[in-house]
Length: 213
Ligand SMILES: Cc1cc2nc3c(=O)[nH]c(=O)nc-3n(C[C@H](O)[C@H](O)[C@H](O)COP(=O)(O)O)c2cc1C
Image 1 (cartoon, protein in one colour):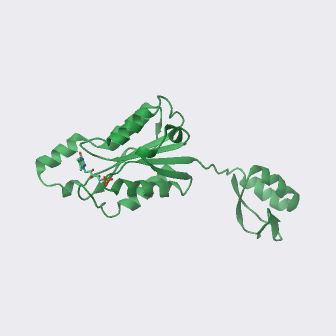
Image 2: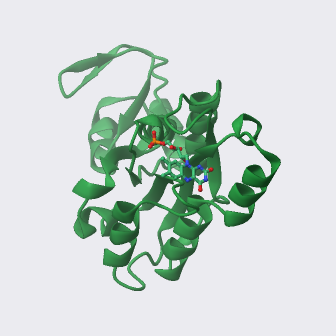
Image 3: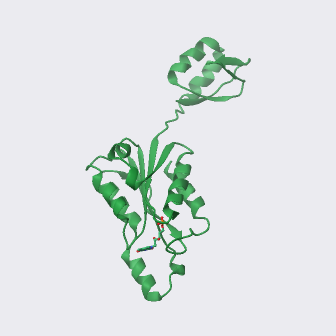
C-alpha cells in the first residue's frame, strides 16, 4: 500500500468512489494499473513519484497482566499510540496464544511489578515462547510500579528500589528469544498499591507507543 496525492484536472471514480483533485488516497499496487487507464499522464506522474514513500502497516501486539486495572489502562494507551502507524491488538497474558505472539511484527509486554518481578502469568507467557521465535521482530517491555515519593519509610524505599522492577526482566526474556529491543524498558507509576496512576501516565504511555510505531 502507498499513499498518493491525486492531482487530476477532473473529478474521477475508482471502485465506485469519487475522488477530488487534491485527495490523498491509499491504493494497492494492483489498483495503480487501474488508475493508469483512467487518469491523465500528469496524475500518473504524481502517483509514480509518491510510490517511493511506500507505507508498511505492521501487526503489533500488546500483552499485559493487571491485578487492579492500572497496567491494563497503560497497555491500552500504548496500543492506541501504536495504532497511529500500525495495527495493534491488546491482550491479557492469560488469554494470548504463542501463535498470536509469533505472528506479530512488534511485541510489547507489560506487567505490574510485584515483589520485584513480573506476575506469574507474564512469566508463563515468556516461558512459552520458543527460543529464537522473536527473530526479526521488534520487542519492548513496560511495567507499573510504585512512585517512590508515595512510599513511607526510607528503608522500605531503598529495598523496593534495590529489588528491581518487572520491565527489565521482561525485556531480557524477550531479547533471549532473539527479539530486537526497540526502546529501553519503561516503568509507569502508580500512587499506591491499587493505584491510581500518577497524572499524565496515560499520555506518556501513548507517546511511548508512538515511539515504538
Ligand atoms: C503483593 C504486591 C507486591 C508489590 N511489589 C512491588 C514492588 O516490588 N515494587 C513496586 O514498585 N511496586 C510493587 N507493588 C505495587 C504494584 O506495582 C502495583 O500494585 C501495580 O503497579 C498496580 O498495577 P495493576 O493495577 O495493573 O495491578 C506491589 C503490589 C503488591 C500488591
